[in-house]
Amino acid sequence: MVNDDRSPGNDRTSPKLIANQSVESMNESVETRPWTGEVDLTFGLVNGQTKPIVTYTKAPFKIQRSFYQPESGVCQVVLLHTGGGIVGGDRLLSRLDLQPQTQVLLTTPAAQKIYRSDGLLSQQNIKLHIQNNSILEFLPLETIVFNGAKYEQKTIVTLETGACFVGWEITRFGRTARAESFETGSWRSFLEVWQAQERDSEEPHTRPIWIDRQQLIDPHVLEHHPFGLNRQAVIGNLVLLGHSLSTDGQANLLQSWERQGYTAPTFTLTRTMEGLVGRYRGNSSHQARQGFIHLWQDWKRSILGQDPWIPRLWG
Image: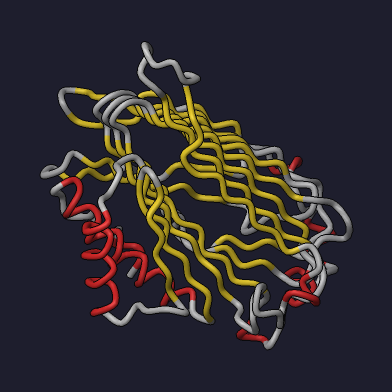
């Protein structure tokens, strides 16, 4: 493992600055030098078991010890952001490469916080390459976007033949426990999933199977709009891609989901040409996560014949 952590003298916040700030003001906005963090992970088969074979991290990222599920061969990885949150000007890059026949579940130990910005945009780029017959379950805990934050996230996923991608994004706008709403600032989230074609295909080598672009540029306008947040603080998306599903298969999963209480208009389910997309709009990140866990469990059992491995740190 290679770790490129900053020395105490190069911390993003100086002791003098911290001493002169109240806890409240630090939670609101942190005057610091931005991070340029990076994580680069490659997973491969070692004696028939998925293990990280290349691990590079640059502050504020760290990788905690991996766990393994003997029955399925899943390698569970926890990605830690040691900075406590993302501030204006941060530039973060994450790259994951799964070699053939590997299975990885990546999560985070806590919610990600996007602090209020004094004008600078914070950006996070995520590039995921899933090679032949591999499965990546990319399931971080929720993101909390503070009022006044300016944040943009781009995720690009490439699936090789037989590969599957499971990913969710759960976002809370404003610290609602403090009666704070997301009235100023901006938020953008772009997701692209590309699937490789057979070499003898007349089509391009890769084709897009899911493009999803969401944004809140004028949150005070869309906060109450029925086509925006509609007075809800939390939105979520779950994608289950790589295997096409029949109409009957979708209907069975939807019926199972609804029997557990996950129904429209709070939860919705859509079939795509290569999988399923679930959505949530409500006021509870816990409810969104629980609903997505149930759908993920049913999908994995029906499509892959495996029981999902729920990370212990999710509680």
